[in-house]
Structures are given as structure tokens and as C-alpha cells.
Length: 482
Ligand code: ADQ
Image (spheres, rainbow, N blue to C red):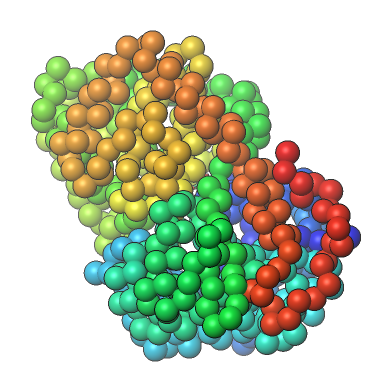
């Protein structure tokens, strides 16, 4: 029976140090592979003086992990460069922050070739390969060049941009055509899927079949929306743990009867942190009766701090938070607690549960798992209120939240007030609906739906010719949808 090979830029297996702060992708993959015997392949996060291509393998729980080191030029051109200075801002509609440098393109192509050269010899005939995220768009093409004919699926964790934005990328067509070498391309939302289909028809002159698959130059690639979720059971256990309870009590004690508004994010411009601080400032200005009765805790873990745009944002957040506290703090009240630390999952669960309002206001986000974690951590009898940006992928599923436009300070300030004064009966009804969705669309369903779709019979997409089905008529156990 074939294995599942998961490929992502970084590998952070369950139990690896630092996994609590690894961001949504690593959290989701760790959860998806937890019960699987499989192989997780990617960059170690280390750089060596000269690239060797040497694959290091180790076992973490049930997962075999295989990593390669990159060199310093790769880190600058591929990771800090094309991935995080070109594609990330562009796909989050920040054309103002996107840089286009030829050396980034070259680094991106080179690292994808290096990944493929190291991975291809590890692939057995029956394996299926699941590639993750914008760092590795051309990987299937590189693997195909090296004779890999297995099923290869791709999942994009971030939003697919609108056609006009994407066409500002030099060589956008090459990038998208490379994607069509996958058997299946998965997006977080219907919105992203439609934007991709629109690009294929309007820019490439391809067609979209009745089933939604795209057809170009005589081949067909399957397309789908697979909204990612959290590992609800694992999160529930974390929330019930002794650590979570201790943190919860500690939090409550420090609140001294005040209500807490909470934000938890990587420190990233896509998360709308600066706009959120300004909306909170507006809330304080508009609601004199709330002064000293609430505070806002923003936990923002440092992320990609070698990239200038992240350093600039950090400096701006330091300044805005300082200004708000300078203007409003009293001798025994700090209106904004701003923390750059990262917390363990169980600690975070305790903090989520203590918050009356969860403020999740990204300007653009593939999904946003914090929104789902916040809901899962609540006390069913006395839950907090989720305020959610209309531009988070999660908003497609979580319309029982207070949905806001994160660019409008007034809109967010009003929602904060509404959340703080919302009667318990309404909070319970909204929370129940949100929780039902979080439970129904967990990370296992996401994984199983994607893998089931990847195993469907081919009809001309992906590999150049139809190889024998890797699993015959049978699905491997554990891959079936529950
Ligand atoms: P991210 O942009 O990292 O993920 P998100 O989905 O919110 O965003 O996931 C963040 C994860 O990191 C959560 O599990 C959260 O608990 C954790 N985290 C954040 N701050 C933390 C802190 N201070 N301490 C500890 N843990 C912290 C990308 C995409 C998202 C998409 C995910 C998954 O940008 O849109 O939802 O991948 O596909």
C-alpha cells in the first residue's frame, strides 16, 4: 500500500520544538499526519555553506521526516525573496509591498529543482504526494521532469488573488501553467477557486468543465475548495488540560473583573493588526463608559523578521500601542496589553477561554485557524463573541460571528461594543452554530476530502500519461471519508 508523502517548505513534525508557534500550516499538517504513517519532506530550516542535497531522515511518532538543508542564497532568494517578498504580498493583494527581482525568480526555480531532485528518489510507485503552499508551485513540474508519475496534489493555504492582481506578476502565466501539472489543486474557499478558474479562462484561454475542473491544451486538472479546519478533539483536550485551566485562572485573576478583548496572530501585515489597534483606539474614544472596564490583549508572535516589511510593521505597532497606552492608561489600568511572545497550545486555549471577545480581523487570509480555535475553547454555557473579518476565508463558513470590514474603524469599534454587551442567550445561540461548523469541518475531513479527490480516476490531467491506479480499486485504510 502506498504512503502519503507530504511536502511543505518547512517541516515541523508533531513534538518538534517550537511547533506551538509554527503557524497554521504546520499546525494543520502535524494534525493531519498524526494518525498516519507517512513521510513528511521539506526544508530543515537550516542553511549550510554549500548546498549538498543530502537528505536527513528521522522518525517523529508515526511520521518519517526527511529534510534537506538549503544554502544562504536559497534562503534569501527563495524563502525571504520570491516566497515572502513576492508571492505572499501579491496573493494577499499587497501589490505595494511586492518586490520583483530576477534573482528571486531564479532562486525559486532552483529550490524547487533541488526539492524535486532530493525527493524523486524517495518516491515509491504507489505513493501519493501532497504538496503544500505557495513556496512549491512548480514542484510537480520538476518531479514530472524526473519521471515521477504518481498522483500529486497541491493545496494552497493562502488566498488565490484576483486576475488583475495576479497579472501584475512577471511571468504569471508560466507559474500557473506549472500548477496544471498537479492532478488536483485545492483552495481554501469557493472565492479562491473561482478566481483561479477565472484566470484560466480569461487569461490563458482555457475552459472550465461542468464539474469545475480546468481544461487547457487538451488536459484536465481537477480543482476544488477544501476549507481547512482544526483538530477539534486535540484542541478540546488542550483546553481541558491542567495547564489550560491554570492559565485561565491566572488570566481571570489578572483581569480584576474587567472584560477582555483578545487577538492572537503571527505578526504579519495581512492580519490587520495596525488597523485593529486603530479600531480599538476608536472604540475607546467612542465609549467613555467602557474606559477601565475592558482591556485588549494582543498576542503577536514575531514572524519573518528578516523581511523589511515585517520590521516596519513591528515598529509601527510599537508606536501605535505606545500612543494608545500613553493616552488612556491610568495608574492601575493598561488598555492595551501587547505581547510578542508565542504560547503553547494548551496555554493559548486557557487564554482564549478567558476572553469575552475574540477579535480576528485580517485584511485578507486564506482561512484563519485562530477564529476556529477561539470558538472551540469557549465555555458552552457562557461563551465569548467572535468578531471576524469578511476577508478571512473562515467568513465563508462562520457567518454566526459578528462579521466586520477590517478597514473600517467604526465598523470594528461598533462590533466590539456589541460583543461586550451581547446578552448571554444570543452569545450561546451564535456560539452553538459556530461550534457545530468547527466540529463538522475539522482537519480530518479536510485531509480525507482532499485525498479522496486526489485518488479519483484521472482524465487527462497531471502526469503526461495514465499510469496504473496506485491503489487499484481499493482506497488505503484511513483515507476514506468518515
Ligand atoms: P497563518 O497565517 O499562520 O496560516 P492561522 O490560520 O491563523 O494563520 O494560523 C495560526 C496558527 O498559529 C494557529 O494555530 C495559532 O494558534 C498559532 N499561533 C498564532 N499566534 C500564536 C502565538 N502567539 N503563540 C502560539 N501559537 C500561535 C496560514 C494561512 C491561513 C490558514 C492557515 C492554515 O495564512 O489563512 O488558515 O495557513 O491553512
